[in-house]
Image (cartoon, rainbow, N blue to C red; front, side, top):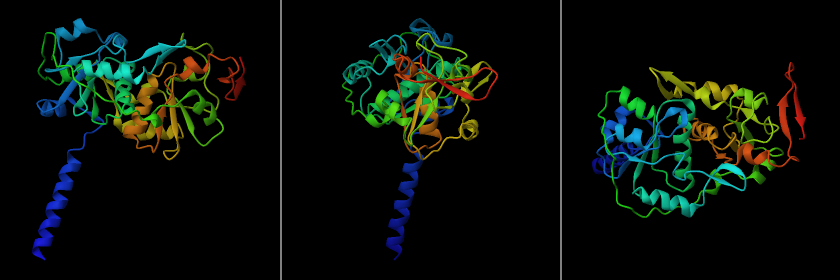
Length: 318
């Protein structure tokens, strides 16, 4: 009996240790500093001109020790196709990109944005989503990015960064994370819920992205502004986990329903996807990477805008 109890105790202990080792979706500078020397851990710095985040020269002036650099806007994480801005590139192209960075299937990837603004966080969220779409689950985001790392007083390296050997990254496409135009159209008549990640003025049709051909949103969508999750502290922008439940409740979303996040070009929507899927625990969340850039291409598709001076919504067929 004692031997059985000992075996059970060892089993439970090992399970507890495994649970403790589970990679969180969001980590801070202290966590990264404590794990920076872990085998197969790769810090992927994705800073770009978004929110004045910088570029390769900025990276070379200062970065997290051992980090590799890949420009979010310049290296092929998104592409323009058939007149639509920001869609997911072909799987083969992404495999080549990730392999060229020296990232393999056995690596833990820590994505570090600039930490300089709410739109900048979407860069990390979009790359995170891309890894998940490609079947790579061992990925996390450094909350606050490089700015947060610097503000925490951690070591800063200079120069070109880590030069990792080119390897072979093999993807397994997770199609359920990627919503198509056809699914979004069908969602308007199904139990799926659409979530517009854009600020309220875009949602209401008072502002319009150059990527969209008409103002407004997809009829029936709920608004969950991406920036509502981001807080600034000492000029560093962090995702605030403490407001997730409040913001989700305000948007009146059902965590059990199939949920599709969208925006203008599939960038801001990545933040909503990340929050709902990885932090709020929604059962099934996808992102529509074509977003309003694709939806608004066809004038036969309905657009919903808010009438000025009224809370009533009007469907417009442009």
